[in-house]
Structures are given as structure tokens and as C-alpha cells.
Image 1 (tube, rainbow, N blue to C red):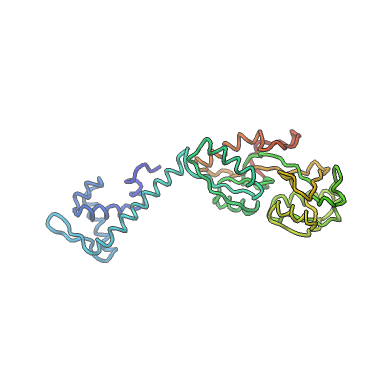
Image 2 (spheres, rainbow, N blue to C red):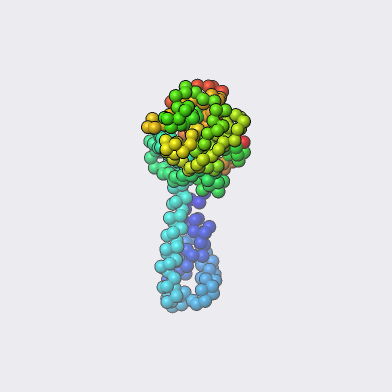
Amino acid sequence: MIDSDADWWSAFAPQLRIVVAVLEEQHITRAARRLGIPQPTVSAVMRRVGEAVGTPLFQQSGRGLIVTAAGHALLPSARGALASLHRARLDVAHALAPDRGRVNLGFLQSRGIQEVPFLIEAFIAKYPDISFGLQQGSDNEIIALMHKQVIDVALVAPLPDDTCLEGVVLDVEQLYLVVPDTHRLASRSSVRMEELGTEGVVALTTSFGLRQVFESLCAEANFRPTIAFEGQGIATLRGFTRAGLGIAVLPRASQPVPGIVEVPICSRKAYREVGAVWLKGRRLAPAAQRFVELLGTLGSRGLNESRIADPAMDRPMITGTG
């Protein structure tokens, strides 16, 4: 890593810092001494820059120099460019500092109510100088941003079938049939998926992983669902269901919702895993790596108390999602 401004400028703007030094010192020898480089190198650079600009930046005056109008015009912007490079070096150093930097986190909207605030609160309690950049979207949108390296870590449900990713299972959510409290199945203690074949359904769009889980349950029950309405959020689907626009298959609400009933589904596949994923083989910045380490410690415990009591469903760490 570049450890000093001089090395940084030498890497990104070797001629610019020489120009600034000469115009400020108004003397080739003093500029060379200030920069710690040979005087012939300074003279050669100034000749090349003058040729590139198309006019001299200074004129000889005895043992010193007189800065020309072009030189005076160039100097403020050149200083600003060097200042920007200095800030860039500090930004890089900040990003790579183990106790500072930024974590770019993507997540489903449904995860932003409890899990994301909990994770961020737990993390910044230990690393208060690390900041977060947050992106919400569907599973497909979030994973696309991850492949573009716009985000470092994503909270998704279920974990995607993508061999380019690795991650950790944080929780397992039981899925329920959600119906209006006046529905024929509202009083049932449980329901089989086969009983839903004639029902109109409200569901998330196909860009959400929960839609694939639902369609898999329908396929196992040998029917194709009739989609009455599609939505972009679980809360929206509950509102549709309460209005009588269709039934839904969703995780349990964090609090009772007036007007709807959640009925357990008789299927060992009626669940979805909640997890965090990141690109396999990508070298994460220290801040993001520390966040991943936190997720690893939570994977064996889960985020909620409502875990499925089935050890076979608890897979705390995965090395690939494909």
C-alpha cells in the first residue's frame, strides 16, 4: 500500500507535483530539493509540460524564475488536483482501516424491519467508526448488484442457487397460509397445499425468492397456482389478503394483523431460509470482512426465537449456494 503523499502523487500525477513545486518556489533547484529528485528531471518535466500546454509556464530571470500568466492560471487548479489526490489517499486508507471504513449492505424490504437494524446495532456497538451504505430491492436486484460489486453483503430469503456466492444461514422461517378471517379455511388448525388449488393467490413478483419457494410447494402438490395479484412486498400482500383479493403463503407476521388468519401448512418444505451471502473469492475490505465475521457468529444461533425445531434444517455455514 502507498504510505505517503509523495509516493501517491508519484504513482498518479508525477508531473503535476513537479509543476506545482516549481511554480511555487519559482526556482528549479529549490523545487528539486523540496521534492527530493534530481534537478535535470525537474527541468525535463517542465519542458514537456510547457510543450503540452503550448506556452511557457515561466521565464528565466537570473537565477530564479518569473511565472507567466499561463503559469498563474494553472497553479490554483493544479494545487486543487493535488489536494484531491491527498483526500483520495485518505479515503483509501480509511476504507482499508480495520476499525473504520464502510459496509455496503443489500437486503429485502421485509428484512429492514427487524434483522437489518439488529445487525447494524450489534455491529456498530463494537465498531462505532464503521458506516453503512444500504440498498433495498428484490432478491434478483440485490444479487445483480452484488455481482457488480456495488454491495458487499446481502440479506436474502431464501439463499439463491448461485455457485458464485457463499454465505451463512441466519434463520429458518416457517411459512403459513394467510387468509381473511372470513375465509373457509380460517378456522382450520392446519391445511395441506393440495387444498389450495382452486384459490386465487396474491404473491410476490418472480424476482423474489419467496415466489420460487411458493411455486415449488404448489408443484409438489401437483397444481399450478392462479395468481390474482402480484406485489413487491409482504406487507402489501397481507393488505391484499385482508381485502379479500386472494390468499397468500407467507412467513408469520411479527405482530397480529387484524382481519387475517395465519394457518400452518402441512409440509416439511413450507419454510424459507434467511441468510447472508457475498461473492465467493472476492477480497472484501476490512470493514465488510468484520461484518461477515459477525454474521458467522450469529449463524449458529439465529436472529429470532421462532426457529423451526428441526436440526436437519439448521445449516449454520455454507460454502456455496449452488
